[in-house]
Amino acid sequence: MKEETLEKDYAIPGARKILIVLTIINLFNYIDRYVLSAVLEPIKKDLGITNDADMGRLATAFMLGYFITSPIFGYLGDRISRKKLMAIGVIGWSLGTCLTGVAQIYAFMIFCRVMVGLGEASFGAIGPAVISDAFSGKKRNQAITIFSIAVPIGAALGFGLGGLIGASLGWRAAFFITGLPGFLLAFLLFAIPEPSRGQSDRGEKVLDKVNLKKIASLFRNKEYVLATIGYVFYTFAMGAFSFWGPAFLAREHGMKVNDATMFLGPTLVIGGLLGTLIGGYLANKWKKKNPAGYAILLSLSVFIAVPFSFISFLTTDTTLSMVCIGISLIFLFQATGPINTVLVECVPANMRASAMAICIFLIHAFGDIWSPELVGHVSDNFKSLRIGMLILPGAFIFAGLFWMWLGRVQASKSSILH
Image (cartoon, rainbow, N blue to C red; front, top):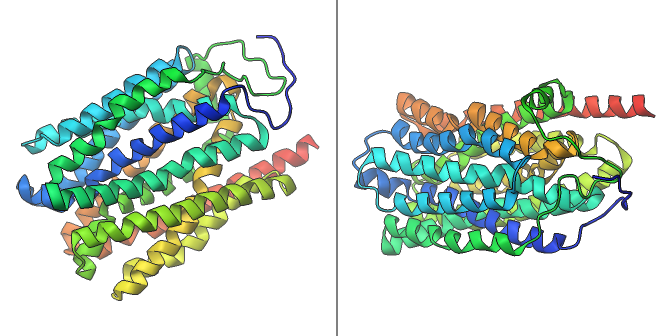
């Protein structure tokens, strides 16, 4: 590819269409992922599951499919058509969601959740890389922030729709209704242009295809490693909370499951939307003044969330717990856009899909693949889900510490360059 000189804040032709389609698909990605959490209690009763550790294992099954295959999709995403790979993934997770609704035994439900994870791995690894190739400069972080807004809204709709449909039509219908739209969404991918790798990067040549040696070099990239380790701890805590949140409110505060999901749904929408937008705005603003602006935002947001998180799990006052959960989410979701921007900007343009895929593998392998089950084990051992949930604020502290370290590395790198 010949060298091009582009404007600092550049978007390729059709970039807006790419962003809209991928954001819509990302919305359903998270709806299908979180609808399970809204119907845990009726599934447990209907399938005769006796302990929380087995329920947590349903989340583990999803993560197995997700993180084991994400490096494969990332590697392929840096070599072959990304639209086709994403379409296969969307169809795969939609089929897995629908099949979850027909599961009659626990083992088959485990298989279905693995299938959902496998399908989502393709889109999760490739989607941010495609957006990064369509936008550059400040527009890139803005685009990734918009793409990330689908995370809280999709999770909230998963909770809300799952709770409403489960209460009125049964938990099986919740999976059918949320899973079917994905088959249509897969075809939308063929209506958007596919940017070439590194197309939006000013003056950057993208000649070589990725090989295993180049992938291994990611682990010598200090910014990438620190960003990812912090993301591991962040994902550990967020994954466990999203899985056990409705059950925590139902058991420890006596709320009906439907009421708990209807609280968490709007709270995720409002808190997630506000947090994501505020985080994207502040990150861009601070980045102009400080090369470590993104990392400063990442560490500061989780540190502020920690005390509210502790209070939300410790207090026996239901109202106070709900308020602190809402405040925590506003700060925690401020990280969603900037962390993905850091990950794609600290690696070469032709390695973005691979970098995202390796990050996905690591944050789930060492994060939320086992955190819901761990919380379940602690809950079983102490006969208290409240005690199990107290693990999570500690994980946020570690995330903040590694992201603070990332900021120091970025500031030091900038001072050397200048």
